Image (tube, rainbow, N blue to C red; front, side, top):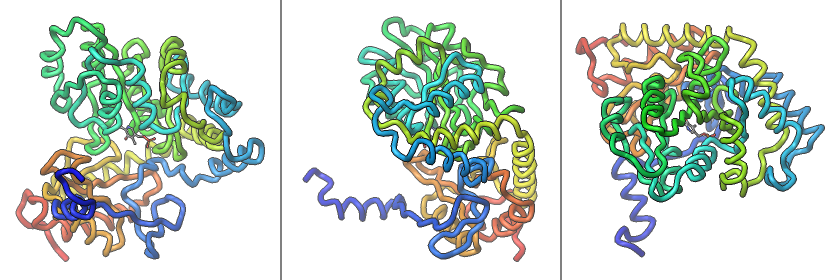
Length: 399
Ligand SMILES: *Cc1c(COP(=O)(O)O)cnc(C)c1O
């Protein structure tokens, strides 16, 4: 036993800091309403931004895939687990992201670990935004490279730190849409800095792909960033695509190198081909239908306008991720519990997922929400946030 003592002591300590996490059991498909521990709740914490996780065509894709290919893939991609559905999905994802090639990974977490540990090693340096997703930080750790964190979206700080880095590989990595804040990385500036210093640029657009851009091409589409600008693009399939898995898109050489070297690609079972078929069905909907994205934009504007009228403090986010920062861990937790008692599922996000003192309610909006559901959430907000988030007008409460 180390200095921490027993596991039960450690658990008490986690609880004491308001960092204890509990799971809820969902007994329904994802959707605007879900059944949680026997209660029907309006769901404002899912990343199923377009409402595709339970779409009939996506479900049918999975069923068709399972009828044709069974359930298990049987092996890793390099052994005998790489199937037709995987291959076709990779080609379609490459076309969708306008990259030479795409490579499927089993999860986004593994994609980030795989890329970083293949491109970097001892003596190399990775520059990361301080609010990057945990998997981007863990990837550097696994690689043995040095991690240098710059202030959130702080290009000036990045440029100061990167100067004078002459030996070894350099990689700049950032979330595209920040997962807990909903704001955007300054991608064009990052691309400029990377080019000026001969560094790799890796953007993890887990929350932008499918959601942003006229065609759902994510932040790269909105900012017009090509493969030359952003050579390493990571996307996940468990969010807007409503299925499971992830991919890396980039040049032929990058993908071929990852196939040879990425340990989280090589030493793991390929995801079920039926899941790849479900994602192909989902990709068709993501690419063809812009009405879901338009509807989502309307809901985001409705929420922000309503919250502003209530005097709630919003962040700079124009995406479906709308955090209401509370600060204190327990206050955020209580606000989330109060919302739940009123019929809403909104998660309290606490450290270490977000920096100390910035615990928050993370409201996520989806194209599946109705206008009325968002209105009802707004009605419940002042009551649960009173005295927890500082109100601009001091009260703003009517019950
Ligand atoms: C969710 C997320 C991941 C992890 O993806 P999974 O497929 O869930 O493992 C990686 N990066 C970011 C920014 C994410 O939000």
